[in-house]
Length: 113
Image (cartoon, rainbow, N blue to C red; front, side, top):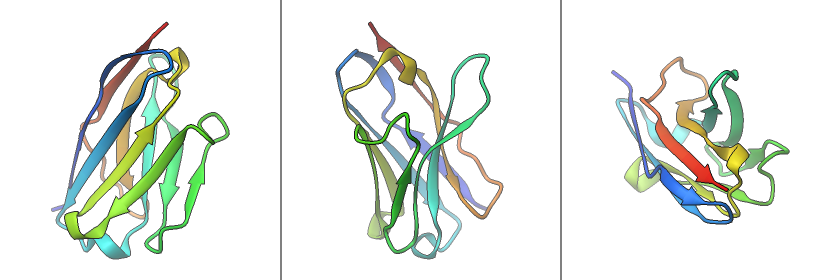
């Protein structure tokens, strides 16, 4: 059974940084593309960043240049480094295996102005 456990969220001031982690189990992590999504209250869940098994990355326009997705296959972990945070980045952040329908429980990120 695939499990995804996110951590690293919290409350930070505008301009600050956070690093999110997602540990995956129950799958062959190194061959799977991974992604981070976020969902703010009243909004649909949106794709923030993705990374292929080979390490190629893509970002939404709203976070490009501020967020960095990376992976450590030895630790079955995908990361999201978030810099220059803005209040509009406030949301619950989820990781996902791109080709599977499994979601973690999410981690709350709150950016105060």
